[in-house]
Image 1 (spheres, rainbow, N blue to C red):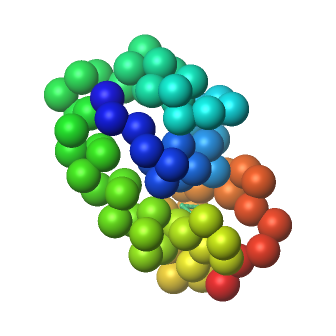
Image 2: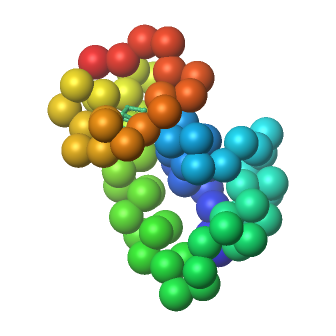
Length: 78
Ligand code: SF4
């Protein structure tokens, strides 16, 4: 599982994992998620993190997964 800062941020905001670093997120996702989804998940979440679930001021008001997201740690958003 390839986890960069985008994937780490998003899955923690979702509440899917609760981890302090991308390295810890990699381990948690590899335990939680079937391996056939690893490559596709990374390919989808990197652009999602660049354009929707951004580091500063994520675009929650237009986010397609808003109703499924715990928004952990999100204090300000668009
Ligand atoms: S609702 Fe907001 S915090 Fe949750 S995934 Fe969408 S943009 Fe990210």
